[in-house]
Image 1 (cartoon, each protein chain N blue to C red):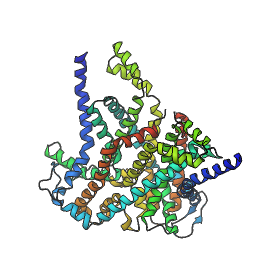
Image 2: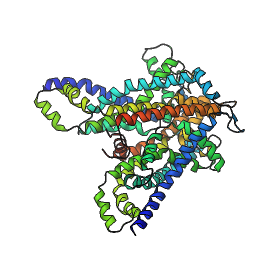
Image 3: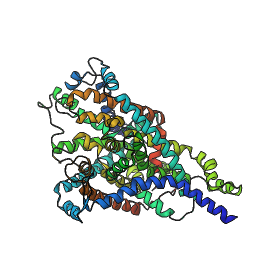
Image 4: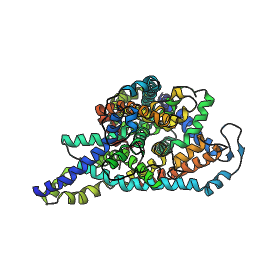
Length: 280
Length: 298
């Protein structure tokens, strides 16, 4: 029995290690590549580590290629849309989990369906709308678009969490004369902290990584680009491969913050996935 | 008194839902109605649109490039399923224990999910570039190939790179879904199976697989709906090229809206309507199959 088990452990261990290396390879490659100067990076070759550690890519990206601005934009968009998502999402989730009103079933059904509509279908009308509302050249156009398109999923997540909180508590609150909103703000909302943390993080992550939406909304104004768009804009700019070293430095700037957040708070990220999707 | 309180609650409910309803109307309902309206017009995005009836839909039926992108989207979906689902299920079974090392594997395997597919796309683009990339570098240094392989200029190979990138991004996500389903299986089942002398693989086929069966519809729909959103990786890696051989529905629609000459926005709206209809149909099927009721806990 033990012998059989130990024989099995070899291919299993090997498979785990291969997948581990596959997962880490692109990240490691980008990290070390960002310290190669452009001549070394473009020379290709099989070596992962730089021959000479060169920090000028970051210096150039930060100062000359406007990445300081892009990083600020990304932070602004992500933080604001996380805050708005938590606020609007929790406000709407409470009536959906406890309230009785006309059209509740319809609203929940519609929210569940629109979650799946491809963003590419929505973005052009949004683009035109932002233009005519005068929102166009502001970071807020991205904050609001990002928040709005993520909300159906967020509301679903918070609603199902709130539905799991015992109703006996709010029965007591009702007898004590608490209004519907008071029951929400002083009882159910504090109890929902874990799911609010999760949804806030997911909203932050989605905004930080988003590409299609901010790409479209910043087409005519490069100064409101977030990092993702800023990095990839260099690919299509006339400079071609001469800016690869800046792109790789920009990629690392985009990856590192979110990876650090994840490593410290991975429990919340994973909770969001399992709470949202696993309901057999 | 009571009815006063009721209506007061009704007002509170209304105001709590209001921000969601406003955003929903502006950023979802309005764009959809907009697309439906402009799908019956010839429109360049600026000048007034002219009504063309169902002309755009007729054009869609005969547009071989469009159907090519539909076929590619379908191909990516099927390949994603065939590759990602077994790997993620296998990984889930392997890391399903309380040891420190398994927790380390779980954390790393899920890591791709927090990174941007567009940014990882550019990293893959560098890795697989013909003359500067590390993949050809390793293959040439080791003598496996003598001339660099044009990974991204060859449609068949480029498709595999896109599939590879998507597997890199998604497997950890699906693994986490499977894990949470596996962890709901009562441990006693495994204990009694061990007592009966069932080995690891017998336990997998007889207990784990049947009991996580209800995860498969969920994952199937996720794979399909992910495929409709497929955009970042294709745009960054190949831009849909060479030609439109690796393009997908979302990229084709995007280019018609934002990178086209002539009045293509009406036609792009018609394609948007078609894509939405397909998505809504799949989404509806999803709820019908899983019988999942929105907002209700188990």
